[in-house]
Length: 449
Ligand code: ADP
Image 1 (tube, protein in one colour):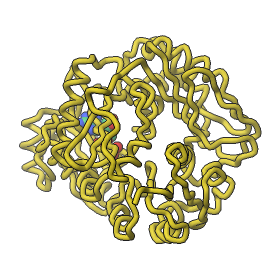
Image 2: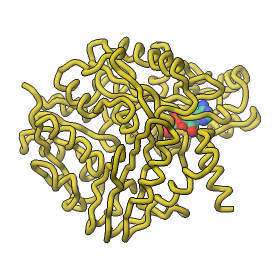
Image 3: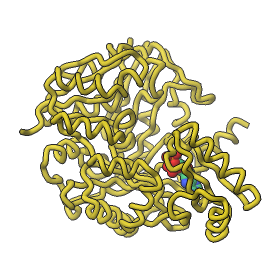
Image 4: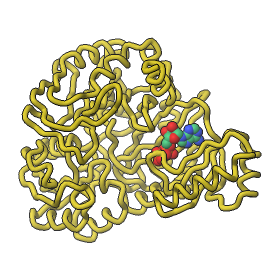
């Protein structure tokens, strides 16, 4: 039976994004929400809505029993997890499938493998993806660590196998600090993730973050949809993303994209995924794979014309990929700004009542957001309130359009990061595409000095 009603296990702009793709396919949607989100746009637009708990995400958007019950009472036949929350929880994916619902996501075993960094790296290596030189799996003993570090050369980075959000990571400049830093990383990882397993990698001094969007049909066919450059980050959080990357040539895209697609085909990967690399001196180094849709997926949609959520739903429904690699064309340039409810200088969160709202518009301007005048941004969740995505035939044209669109955006009542983006896109280094993962923090440090 084809999917006819999707429960969207998420909130905010991503819940709206899934709703829109579903409705365009003639599929009904069921929103779930916490008590804090009763007035949210994703609840208003969905065909049905079910309250799944109090504001705390643990008791609502992460509450598997409540979400499965909501799917049963609403007679949904599929679940889309969005990003964040339960999207990379293999157990949840298994429970969804065990209830006879279609999981709009990768196979649970692939979510599990890629969620464990040591297993992910091992599997990436076996699939032919280039790795950061380092230990072959977990390192428990100091003597072994010393030999590995001496072999790859300092500085090295000690990372937690169950890590995430940059926690349990230590950069080690020289051998005399290795033992201490290994102990620190292990105990930090133990308290954050309940697992003190660590591994070692060469520390790359000044790389870019470049990721490839891939799609598999679960039957051994896979395609890539090019790369995104997400080097502009603050505290490992992406701020602005663009596609294509200013430093990747068409040949390099085709070559590396094929390596990624072939790896996913060999794995029998199903659905959307992102393979993240650090890129330095023309070389790619795998760091992790995200087994879900990404926040920044619209820039890929803009340059390929492929609706990635529609594609996810089709694959979950057992249909083939709607485009072949040969049919895919990359055209133009796209940039996404993540607009957060926060002070543009101190980054302090700024939830509260939105008194006035006007979204930018015009040709090739897309705003993904659940904002409206009179909406109260709750303090309990992520501070991202809108994504502004623009497209242009060239990078220069795209930046001019972005500048114009940022001028048009009006969000009053709360503070937003719009002024940060306006300042950022005027910088020469940005205009020249000349930035790495360190650039934004260095620029902010100089600006605030
Ligand atoms: P997490 O899952 O905790 O976010 P990642 O492995 O994705 O961890 O790494 C997060 C960030 O840490 C990267 O985007 C990069 O900025 C930095 N990083 C990770 N590994 C390395 C490395 N080998 N060399 C330099 N920087 C690294």
